[in-house]
Length: 254
Image 1: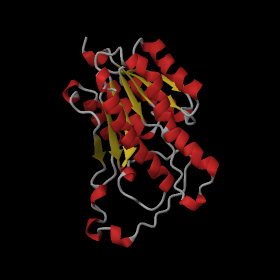
Image 2: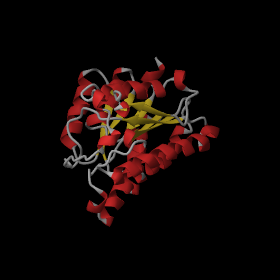
Image 3: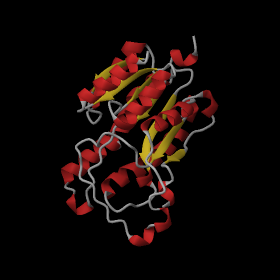
Image 4: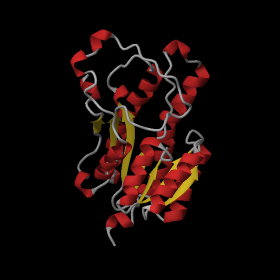
């Protein structure tokens, strides 16, 4: 039996969008996966159906990663179903697309509780099982917003910047356990829609634009993120930890 046919991945926010692309790729490569969603159950069921029709093995679990009990249950139920956990991909996130004076305390608290708190909870709950894996991995989905201001959602950018530093700290802390931790700085990606359907607005200062690059970059496809996750989870990437890899179709160059 190939190693990937034994390995188990839990990908948060994988019912649709980027996460769905990740689990579709992993399952095609023989991984057994937990498809996770919070609010969009119908799309998650469609993703699960696509995986099974292609011969993959997966389960579907619904949970709110901002709730400690639900985060714990998500990990425990995945392990109960498959007997182990080898890869945790933190992907579930919110983006409100709000200017800073449009945020109130409750909205900002919710954003941080999901985008940073959710990652922290999932890692904390997954660690006892990852430490038992012969080839454990953690991949955190961050964003190019963590590196370059884009002038339309400072709250979201702060959480993604936090994820980059969180990844680096964990890479040092978990190195003793042999658990590489890496992040993907993701650019604009072609997905169905963002959770909550936030309105988009951007007033990027003209001095930060390169007009010569207008229309010359493309959106990333969800499966392309899946292929990068697959590499980071492979033995070939065992020396990589604490890295923040940009995957953006050249958007940071514009």
